[in-house]
Structures are given as structure tokens and as C-alpha cells.
Length: 128
Image (cartoon, rainbow, N blue to C red; front, side, top):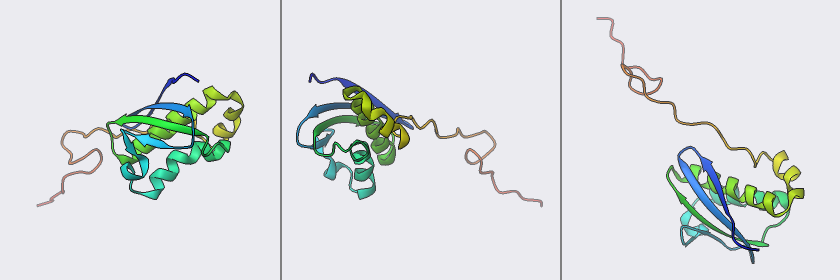
């Protein structure tokens, strides 16, 4: 199978994911993903599409990710992997969709408003 690019996005993180049949090795920005994602929660999040489709250990993942924070990056890689698995085998679509892995999370950071400290937080009110 020739490498094909799949893009996943979450918040400001953009992941470019390549899937290749192999032993299940995951590489993120030329590092092992255990070293890149210190928290087990993020590593489990990335492997979720493989667990849902029962293909854990069958594909090697090469991901380049930039922007956003660690959580957004792990979610964007997860979406890229899900899209790649769906392309490889359309029968995976139902199991991926039931887990909610094919949907891009549309939530973004709300912008700061003028006259306020943050998006919704106000400056302290003083009556006198």
C-alpha cells in the first residue's frame, strides 16, 4: 500500500498521518509516541481507533503534528488514524462511527472581548 496522507484537526493542532502495514509502531514528529506523549491518557486516545476496529499492532503510524497543545495534538492524530483506517477498509466505518471517531470536534477557544479580562470573565466590579 502506497503511503497516503490523512489530516486530522482539533483546536489549533493539525496532524498529518501516514499509515503503513507493519508491527504497530507509532512515531510522532520522529519520536516514539511514548516519549512524545508522557500521559497514558493521550497514548490510549491515539490507539482508540485500532482498538475499535480490532487492528491493534497491524499498522505502523507516522504522524507529523504541530500547533495547539498536547491534548489537541493527540485528538488530531486520532482523527487522522480513523480516517486512514476507513480508507483502508470501508467496513471499519460503522465501528469507528459508533465510537464517534470520524467526527471532527468543532469546539474552539472563544475570543477575548474588549472591556473584559478574558472571554467571559469580567474585571472586578467596584461599587464605590
